[in-house]
Length: 226
Length: 226
Image 1 (cartoon, rainbow over the protein chains, first blue to last red):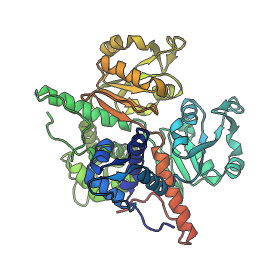
Image 2 (cartoon, each protein chain N blue to C red; image 1 turned 120 degrees about the vertical axis):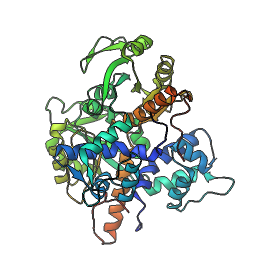
Image 3 (tube, one colour; image 1 turned 30 degrees about the vertical axis):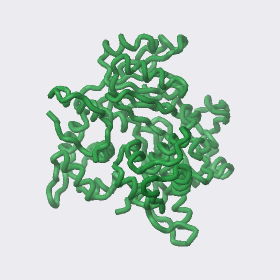
Image 4 (cartoon, each protein chain N blue to C red; image 1 turned 90 degrees about the vertical axis):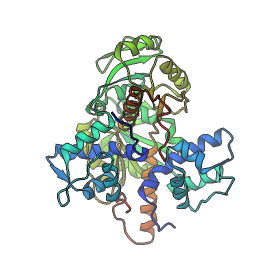
Protein backbone atom coordinates (compact mmCIF):
# COMPACT_ATOMS: atom_id res chain seq x y z
CA UNK A 1 0.00 0.00 0.00
CA UNK A 2 1.41 3.32 -1.08
CA UNK A 3 0.98 6.36 1.09
CA UNK A 4 3.86 8.56 0.06
CA UNK A 5 3.85 11.01 -2.83
CA UNK A 6 6.49 11.17 -5.51
CA UNK A 7 7.01 14.66 -6.98
CA UNK A 8 4.91 15.24 -10.08
CA UNK A 9 8.00 16.10 -12.15
CA UNK A 10 9.50 12.72 -11.28
CA UNK A 11 6.27 10.94 -12.26
CA UNK A 12 6.46 12.77 -15.60
CA UNK A 13 9.98 11.45 -16.21
CA UNK A 14 9.31 7.81 -15.24
CA UNK A 15 7.64 6.95 -18.59
CA UNK A 16 10.66 8.44 -20.37
CA UNK A 17 13.07 6.29 -18.33
CA UNK A 18 10.84 3.28 -18.94
CA UNK A 19 10.95 3.82 -22.68
CA UNK A 20 14.75 3.98 -22.67
CA UNK A 21 15.07 0.96 -20.38
CA UNK A 22 12.76 -1.17 -22.52
CA UNK A 23 14.75 -0.24 -25.63
CA UNK A 24 17.98 -1.21 -23.84
CA UNK A 25 16.50 -4.51 -22.65
CA UNK A 26 15.40 -5.30 -26.20
CA UNK A 27 18.98 -4.70 -27.31
CA UNK A 28 20.21 -7.14 -24.67
CA UNK A 29 21.70 -4.55 -22.31
CA UNK A 30 21.69 -5.94 -18.72
CA UNK A 31 23.00 -2.99 -16.68
CA UNK A 32 22.98 0.73 -17.31
CA UNK A 33 24.71 3.63 -15.56
CA UNK A 34 22.77 6.67 -14.38
CA UNK A 35 24.86 8.70 -16.85
CA UNK A 36 23.82 6.58 -19.84
CA UNK A 37 20.18 6.64 -18.76
CA UNK A 38 20.36 10.38 -18.20
CA UNK A 39 21.86 11.01 -21.60
CA UNK A 40 19.25 8.88 -23.38
CA UNK A 41 16.41 10.49 -21.43
CA UNK A 42 17.70 14.04 -21.88
CA UNK A 43 18.16 14.95 -18.21
CA UNK A 44 21.23 15.16 -16.00
CA UNK A 45 22.45 12.13 -14.09
CA UNK A 46 22.00 13.62 -10.61
CA UNK A 47 18.30 13.99 -11.42
CA UNK A 48 18.09 10.38 -12.63
CA UNK A 49 19.62 9.16 -9.39
CA UNK A 50 17.29 11.33 -7.31
CA UNK A 51 14.22 10.23 -9.29
CA UNK A 52 15.09 6.55 -9.00
CA UNK A 53 15.81 6.87 -5.29
CA UNK A 54 12.06 7.54 -4.82
CA UNK A 55 11.52 3.99 -6.09
CA UNK A 56 14.04 2.70 -3.58
CA UNK A 57 16.47 2.03 -6.44
CA UNK A 58 20.07 3.16 -5.95
CA UNK A 59 22.06 1.10 -8.45
CA UNK A 60 25.47 -0.36 -7.71
CA UNK A 61 28.56 1.84 -7.79
CA UNK A 62 30.68 1.09 -10.84
CA UNK A 63 28.01 -1.22 -12.26
CA UNK A 64 24.86 0.83 -12.55
CA UNK A 65 21.25 -0.28 -12.47
CA UNK A 66 19.96 -3.73 -13.30
CA UNK A 67 17.84 -2.94 -16.38
CA UNK A 68 15.26 -5.74 -15.98
CA UNK A 69 14.73 -5.01 -12.28
CA UNK A 70 14.49 -1.27 -12.84
CA UNK A 71 11.86 -1.85 -15.56
CA UNK A 72 9.89 -3.85 -13.02
CA UNK A 73 10.21 -1.13 -10.40
CA UNK A 74 9.16 1.68 -12.74
CA UNK A 75 6.24 -0.34 -14.10
CA UNK A 76 5.11 -1.18 -10.59
CA UNK A 77 5.38 2.43 -9.46
CA UNK A 78 3.39 3.71 -12.44
CA UNK A 79 0.78 1.03 -11.88
CA UNK A 80 1.50 -0.60 -15.25
CA UNK A 81 1.51 -4.06 -13.73
CA UNK A 82 -2.26 -3.62 -13.42
CA UNK A 83 -4.80 -3.90 -16.19
CA UNK A 84 -6.10 -0.55 -17.44
CA UNK A 85 -9.08 -0.79 -19.76
CA UNK A 86 -9.26 2.34 -21.92
CA UNK A 87 -12.24 3.79 -23.78
CA UNK A 88 -11.76 6.06 -26.80
CA UNK A 89 -14.51 8.56 -27.64
CA UNK A 90 -14.56 10.03 -31.14
CA UNK A 91 -13.48 7.60 -33.82
CA UNK A 92 -12.28 10.02 -36.50
CA UNK A 93 -8.72 9.92 -37.83
CA UNK A 94 -7.08 10.43 -34.45
CA UNK A 95 -9.39 7.96 -32.71
CA UNK A 96 -8.61 5.39 -35.41
CA UNK A 97 -4.89 6.02 -35.03
CA UNK A 98 -4.98 5.67 -31.25
CA UNK A 99 -7.17 2.53 -31.39
CA UNK A 100 -4.47 0.97 -33.56
CA UNK A 101 -1.49 2.43 -31.64
CA UNK A 102 0.76 -0.42 -30.57
CA UNK A 103 2.45 1.57 -27.85
CA UNK A 104 -0.69 1.40 -25.67
CA UNK A 105 -0.88 -2.38 -25.34
CA UNK A 106 2.87 -2.52 -24.85
CA UNK A 107 2.48 -0.32 -21.74
CA UNK A 108 -0.44 -2.27 -20.25
CA UNK A 109 -3.28 -0.21 -21.69
CA UNK A 110 -5.93 -2.24 -23.38
CA UNK A 111 -8.28 -0.33 -25.67
CA UNK A 112 -11.49 -2.01 -24.51
CA UNK A 113 -14.22 0.11 -26.11
CA UNK A 114 -14.80 2.75 -28.77
CA UNK A 115 -17.71 5.19 -28.88
CA UNK A 116 -18.86 7.80 -31.37
CA UNK A 117 -21.90 10.06 -31.67
CA UNK A 118 -22.35 9.49 -35.40
CA UNK A 119 -24.84 6.74 -36.33
CA UNK A 120 -22.76 6.22 -39.51
CA UNK A 121 -19.76 5.08 -37.46
CA UNK A 122 -21.63 2.89 -34.98
CA UNK A 123 -21.17 -0.79 -35.81
CA UNK A 124 -17.96 -0.18 -37.80
CA UNK A 125 -15.09 -2.42 -36.65
CA UNK A 126 -11.87 -0.55 -35.74
CA UNK A 127 -8.81 -2.38 -34.40
CA UNK A 128 -11.01 -5.43 -33.86
CA UNK A 129 -13.61 -3.58 -31.78
CA UNK A 130 -17.10 -2.45 -32.74
CA UNK A 131 -17.77 1.29 -32.51
CA UNK A 132 -20.67 1.77 -30.06
CA UNK A 133 -22.95 4.75 -29.62
CA UNK A 134 -21.92 7.33 -27.03
CA UNK A 135 -25.37 6.98 -25.42
CA UNK A 136 -24.23 3.53 -24.28
CA UNK A 137 -21.39 5.00 -22.17
CA UNK A 138 -22.75 4.05 -18.70
CA UNK A 139 -23.37 0.45 -19.74
CA UNK A 140 -19.96 0.17 -21.47
CA UNK A 141 -18.06 1.62 -18.49
CA UNK A 142 -19.74 -0.88 -16.17
CA UNK A 143 -19.31 -3.80 -18.56
CA UNK A 144 -15.60 -3.22 -19.29
CA UNK A 145 -14.54 -1.66 -15.99
CA UNK A 146 -13.18 1.33 -17.93
CA UNK A 147 -10.43 3.13 -15.96
CA UNK A 148 -9.41 5.83 -18.41
CA UNK A 149 -11.37 7.73 -21.05
CA UNK A 150 -9.62 9.27 -24.06
CA UNK A 151 -11.30 12.24 -25.76
CA UNK A 152 -10.62 12.34 -29.51
CA UNK A 153 -13.71 14.23 -30.61
CA UNK A 154 -13.70 17.56 -32.43
CA UNK A 155 -13.14 20.49 -30.06
CA UNK A 156 -16.84 21.41 -30.16
CA UNK A 157 -17.88 18.07 -28.62
CA UNK A 158 -15.05 17.68 -26.10
CA UNK A 159 -16.71 19.16 -23.01
CA UNK A 160 -19.96 17.27 -23.57
CA UNK A 161 -18.28 13.90 -23.99
CA UNK A 162 -16.06 14.63 -20.97
CA UNK A 163 -19.16 15.37 -18.86
CA UNK A 164 -20.76 12.14 -20.07
CA UNK A 165 -17.62 10.15 -19.19
CA UNK A 166 -17.62 11.63 -15.69
CA UNK A 167 -21.33 10.92 -15.27
CA UNK A 168 -20.66 7.31 -16.32
CA UNK A 169 -18.07 6.95 -13.56
CA UNK A 170 -14.76 7.49 -15.40
CA UNK A 171 -12.29 9.26 -13.10
CA UNK A 172 -9.24 9.65 -15.36
CA UNK A 173 -9.51 11.48 -18.65
CA UNK A 174 -6.95 12.15 -21.36
CA UNK A 175 -7.96 14.98 -23.69
CA UNK A 176 -6.46 14.92 -27.19
CA UNK A 177 -8.93 17.47 -28.57
CA UNK A 178 -7.63 21.01 -28.91
CA UNK A 179 -10.42 22.28 -26.63
CA UNK A 180 -9.86 23.04 -22.96
CA UNK A 181 -12.27 20.98 -20.85
CA UNK A 182 -13.02 21.06 -17.13
CA UNK A 183 -13.73 18.21 -14.75
CA UNK A 184 -14.83 17.91 -11.09
CA UNK A 185 -12.13 17.97 -8.40
CA UNK A 186 -12.02 14.19 -7.95
CA UNK A 187 -11.37 13.45 -11.63
CA UNK A 188 -7.83 13.42 -13.03
CA UNK A 189 -7.41 15.18 -16.34
CA UNK A 190 -4.45 15.48 -18.69
CA UNK A 191 -4.47 17.59 -21.81
CA UNK A 192 -2.27 16.33 -24.63
CA UNK A 193 -0.75 19.04 -26.78
CA UNK A 194 0.46 17.36 -29.96
CA UNK A 195 2.40 20.50 -30.88
CA UNK A 196 4.50 20.44 -27.69
CA UNK A 197 7.43 18.54 -29.18
CA UNK A 198 7.29 20.65 -32.33
CA UNK A 199 7.78 23.71 -30.13
CA UNK A 200 10.80 22.15 -28.48
CA UNK A 201 12.27 21.25 -31.88
CA UNK A 202 11.69 24.81 -33.04
CA UNK A 203 13.74 26.08 -30.11
CA UNK A 204 16.71 23.90 -31.04
CA UNK A 205 16.34 24.63 -34.75
CA UNK A 206 16.38 28.36 -34.02
CA UNK A 207 19.38 27.92 -31.73
CA UNK A 208 21.33 25.94 -34.32
CA UNK A 209 20.66 28.67 -36.87
CA UNK A 210 21.87 31.34 -34.43
CA UNK A 211 25.02 29.39 -33.55
CA UNK A 212 25.82 28.77 -37.21
CA UNK A 213 25.35 32.44 -38.02
CA UNK A 214 28.20 33.31 -35.62
CA UNK A 215 30.40 30.63 -37.16
CA UNK A 216 30.66 28.45 -34.08
CA UNK A 217 29.33 25.37 -35.84
CA UNK A 218 26.42 23.09 -35.11
CA UNK A 219 26.89 20.52 -32.40
CA UNK A 220 24.30 18.07 -31.23
CA UNK A 221 21.26 20.16 -30.45
CA UNK A 222 19.60 17.78 -28.02
CA UNK A 223 22.55 17.21 -25.74
CA UNK A 224 21.24 17.73 -22.23
CA UNK A 225 22.46 20.83 -20.51
CA UNK A 226 23.86 19.86 -17.10
CA UNK B 1 21.63 36.72 -31.36
CA UNK B 2 21.40 33.99 -28.77
CA UNK B 3 24.50 32.40 -27.36
CA UNK B 4 23.41 31.17 -23.98
CA UNK B 5 21.76 27.84 -23.27
CA UNK B 6 18.57 27.39 -21.28
CA UNK B 7 18.32 24.06 -19.40
CA UNK B 8 16.53 21.40 -21.42
CA UNK B 9 14.00 20.82 -18.63
CA UNK B 10 13.06 24.52 -18.77
CA UNK B 11 12.66 24.35 -22.56
CA UNK B 12 10.34 21.38 -22.03
CA UNK B 13 8.13 23.41 -19.68
CA UNK B 14 7.92 26.58 -21.80
CA UNK B 15 5.26 25.11 -24.15
CA UNK B 16 3.21 24.15 -21.09
CA UNK B 17 3.40 27.69 -19.69
CA UNK B 18 2.56 29.05 -23.13
CA UNK B 19 -0.55 26.91 -23.33
CA UNK B 20 -1.77 28.13 -19.94
CA UNK B 21 -0.95 31.77 -20.72
CA UNK B 22 -2.79 31.68 -24.04
CA UNK B 23 -5.86 30.17 -22.35
CA UNK B 24 -5.71 32.93 -19.71
CA UNK B 25 -5.34 35.64 -22.36
CA UNK B 26 -8.36 34.23 -24.21
CA UNK B 27 -10.34 34.50 -20.97
CA UNK B 28 -9.32 38.15 -20.66
CA UNK B 29 -6.83 37.70 -17.80
CA UNK B 30 -4.22 40.48 -17.93
CA UNK B 31 -1.81 39.50 -15.12
CA UNK B 32 -1.03 36.21 -13.48
CA UNK B 33 0.94 35.29 -10.36
CA UNK B 34 3.71 32.68 -10.48
CA UNK B 35 1.58 30.63 -8.08
CA UNK B 36 -1.43 30.57 -10.39
CA UNK B 37 0.75 29.76 -13.40
CA UNK B 38 2.51 27.03 -11.40
CA UNK B 39 -0.74 25.47 -10.30
CA UNK B 40 -2.18 25.41 -13.83
CA UNK B 41 1.08 24.04 -15.26
CA UNK B 42 1.49 21.41 -12.55
CA UNK B 43 4.89 22.55 -11.20
CA UNK B 44 5.83 24.51 -8.10
CA UNK B 45 6.00 28.28 -8.16
CA UNK B 46 9.73 28.54 -7.36
CA UNK B 47 10.41 26.55 -10.53
CA UNK B 48 8.13 28.82 -12.57
CA UNK B 49 10.02 31.89 -11.33
CA UNK B 50 13.39 30.26 -12.06
CA UNK B 51 12.30 29.15 -15.53
CA UNK B 52 10.96 32.57 -16.45
CA UNK B 53 14.08 34.28 -15.12
CA UNK B 54 15.97 32.64 -18.01
CA UNK B 55 13.78 34.72 -20.32
CA UNK B 56 14.67 37.84 -18.35
CA UNK B 57 11.12 37.92 -16.96
CA UNK B 58 10.72 38.50 -13.24
CA UNK B 59 7.13 39.72 -12.82
CA UNK B 60 6.10 42.46 -10.42
CA UNK B 61 5.78 41.76 -6.71
CA UNK B 62 2.13 41.68 -5.66
CA UNK B 63 0.96 41.94 -9.27
CA UNK B 64 2.52 39.00 -11.12
CA UNK B 65 3.40 38.66 -14.76
CA UNK B 66 1.89 40.60 -17.62
CA UNK B 67 0.22 37.78 -19.54
CA UNK B 68 0.45 39.30 -23.04
CA UNK B 69 4.10 40.27 -22.62
CA UNK B 70 5.02 36.89 -21.17
CA UNK B 71 3.33 35.14 -24.13
CA UNK B 72 5.48 37.27 -26.41
CA UNK B 73 8.65 36.40 -24.48
CA UNK B 74 7.96 32.65 -24.43
CA UNK B 75 7.04 32.62 -28.13
CA UNK B 76 10.18 34.57 -28.98
CA UNK B 77 12.35 32.24 -26.90
CA UNK B 78 10.87 29.11 -28.47
CA UNK B 79 11.30 30.59 -31.93
CA UNK B 80 7.55 30.62 -32.54
CA UNK B 81 7.65 34.12 -33.95
CA UNK B 82 9.33 32.59 -36.98
CA UNK B 83 7.67 30.63 -39.73
CA UNK B 84 8.19 26.85 -39.47
CA UNK B 85 7.09 24.91 -42.54
CA UNK B 86 6.38 21.31 -41.55
CA UNK B 87 6.27 18.20 -43.74
CA UNK B 88 4.29 15.12 -42.71
CA UNK B 89 5.37 11.73 -44.07
CA UNK B 90 2.85 8.89 -43.92
CA UNK B 91 -0.73 10.00 -44.51
CA UNK B 92 -2.60 7.20 -42.70
CA UNK B 93 -4.99 7.92 -39.84
CA UNK B 94 -2.41 9.67 -37.70
CA UNK B 95 -0.98 11.67 -40.62
CA UNK B 96 -4.51 12.76 -41.52
CA UNK B 97 -5.22 13.73 -37.93
CA UNK B 98 -2.00 15.77 -37.62
CA UNK B 99 -2.51 17.46 -41.01
CA UNK B 100 -5.87 18.67 -39.70
CA UNK B 101 -4.67 19.44 -36.15
CA UNK B 102 -5.51 23.06 -35.37
CA UNK B 103 -2.99 23.30 -32.57
CA UNK B 104 -0.09 23.37 -35.06
CA UNK B 105 -1.11 26.52 -36.93
CA UNK B 106 -2.00 28.19 -33.63
CA UNK B 107 1.63 27.72 -32.51
CA UNK B 108 3.22 28.95 -35.76
CA UNK B 109 3.67 25.61 -37.48
CA UNK B 110 2.35 25.52 -41.00
CA UNK B 111 1.83 22.08 -42.48
CA UNK B 112 3.32 22.84 -45.90
CA UNK B 113 3.60 19.39 -47.52
CA UNK B 114 2.40 15.79 -47.18
CA UNK B 115 4.16 12.75 -48.60
CA UNK B 116 3.31 9.05 -48.75
CA UNK B 117 4.86 6.01 -50.38
CA UNK B 118 1.55 4.59 -51.60
CA UNK B 119 0.61 5.51 -55.19
CA UNK B 120 -3.03 5.18 -54.10
CA UNK B 121 -2.68 8.11 -51.71
CA UNK B 122 -0.64 10.38 -53.99
CA UNK B 123 -2.84 13.14 -55.42
CA UNK B 124 -5.45 12.87 -52.65
CA UNK B 125 -6.21 16.22 -50.99
CA UNK B 126 -5.83 16.26 -47.20
CA UNK B 127 -6.34 19.45 -45.17
CA UNK B 128 -6.22 21.39 -48.43
CA UNK B 129 -2.87 19.97 -49.54
CA UNK B 130 -2.13 17.36 -52.20
CA UNK B 131 -0.37 14.21 -51.01
CA UNK B 132 2.91 13.93 -52.96
CA UNK B 133 5.14 10.91 -53.48
CA UNK B 134 7.96 10.41 -50.98
CA UNK B 135 10.39 10.22 -53.92
CA UNK B 136 9.78 13.95 -54.37
CA UNK B 137 11.18 14.76 -50.90
CA UNK B 138 14.32 16.65 -52.02
CA UNK B 139 12.34 18.86 -54.41
CA UNK B 140 9.60 19.48 -51.82
CA UNK B 141 12.07 20.39 -49.06
CA UNK B 142 13.78 22.90 -51.33
CA UNK B 143 10.50 24.31 -52.69
CA UNK B 144 8.81 24.80 -49.28
CA UNK B 145 11.89 25.45 -47.15
CA UNK B 146 10.80 22.60 -44.85
CA UNK B 147 12.25 23.04 -41.34
CA UNK B 148 10.72 20.06 -39.53
CA UNK B 149 9.77 16.60 -40.74
CA UNK B 150 7.10 14.57 -38.94
CA UNK B 151 7.24 10.77 -39.28
CA UNK B 152 3.76 9.18 -39.17
CA UNK B 153 4.52 6.04 -41.15
CA UNK B 154 4.12 2.49 -39.85
CA UNK B 155 7.04 1.42 -37.65
CA UNK B 156 8.53 -0.68 -40.45
CA UNK B 157 9.03 2.37 -42.70
CA UNK B 158 10.13 4.86 -40.05
CA UNK B 159 13.92 4.55 -40.35
CA UNK B 160 13.86 4.66 -44.15
CA UNK B 161 11.73 7.78 -44.32
CA UNK B 162 13.88 9.39 -41.59
CA UNK B 163 17.01 8.68 -43.65
CA UNK B 164 15.36 10.17 -46.71
CA UNK B 165 14.35 13.28 -44.78
CA UNK B 166 17.92 13.73 -43.57
CA UNK B 167 19.29 13.20 -47.09
CA UNK B 168 16.85 15.84 -48.34
CA UNK B 169 18.26 18.35 -45.83
CA UNK B 170 15.74 18.23 -42.98
CA UNK B 171 17.54 18.72 -39.66
CA UNK B 172 14.70 18.46 -37.15
CA UNK B 173 12.56 15.34 -37.01
CA UNK B 174 9.57 14.44 -34.87
CA UNK B 175 8.89 10.70 -34.77
CA UNK B 176 5.31 9.64 -34.01
CA UNK B 177 5.86 6.07 -35.16
CA UNK B 178 6.38 3.50 -32.43
CA UNK B 179 9.76 2.54 -33.93
CA UNK B 180 13.04 3.84 -32.55
CA UNK B 181 14.96 5.65 -35.29
CA UNK B 182 18.48 7.05 -35.37
CA UNK B 183 19.80 10.21 -36.97
CA UNK B 184 23.23 11.78 -37.53
CA UNK B 185 24.70 13.94 -34.76
CA UNK B 186 23.72 17.22 -36.34
CA UNK B 187 20.03 16.34 -36.68
CA UNK B 188 17.59 16.98 -33.83
CA UNK B 189 15.18 14.17 -33.12
CA UNK B 190 12.26 13.89 -30.75
CA UNK B 191 10.29 10.71 -30.25
CA UNK B 192 6.64 11.19 -29.32
CA UNK B 193 5.22 8.53 -27.03
CA UNK B 194 1.45 8.84 -27.24
CA UNK B 195 1.10 6.55 -24.20
CA UNK B 196 3.14 8.84 -21.93
CA UNK B 197 0.18 10.74 -20.51
CA UNK B 198 -1.76 7.49 -20.09
CA UNK B 199 1.08 6.21 -17.92
CA UNK B 200 0.96 9.34 -15.77
CA UNK B 201 -2.83 8.99 -15.40
CA UNK B 202 -2.38 5.34 -14.41
CA UNK B 203 -0.06 6.42 -11.61
CA UNK B 204 -2.64 8.83 -10.17
CA UNK B 205 -5.50 6.37 -10.68
CA UNK B 206 -3.56 3.71 -8.79
CA UNK B 207 -2.72 6.20 -6.05
CA UNK B 208 -6.33 7.31 -5.68
CA UNK B 209 -7.39 3.67 -5.34
CA UNK B 210 -4.71 3.09 -2.68
CA UNK B 211 -5.70 6.21 -0.73
CA UNK B 212 -9.38 5.30 -0.87
CA UNK B 213 -8.64 1.81 0.36
CA UNK B 214 -7.21 3.27 3.58
CA UNK B 215 -10.24 5.54 3.97
CA UNK B 216 -8.39 8.81 3.62
CA UNK B 217 -10.59 10.00 0.77
CA UNK B 218 -9.85 11.21 -2.73
CA UNK B 219 -8.57 14.73 -3.17
CA UNK B 220 -7.46 16.25 -6.39
CA UNK B 221 -4.98 13.81 -7.87
CA UNK B 222 -3.14 16.24 -10.11
CA UNK B 223 -2.37 18.84 -7.46
CA UNK B 224 1.34 19.58 -7.81
CA UNK B 225 3.50 18.25 -5.03
CA UNK B 226 5.69 21.11 -3.72
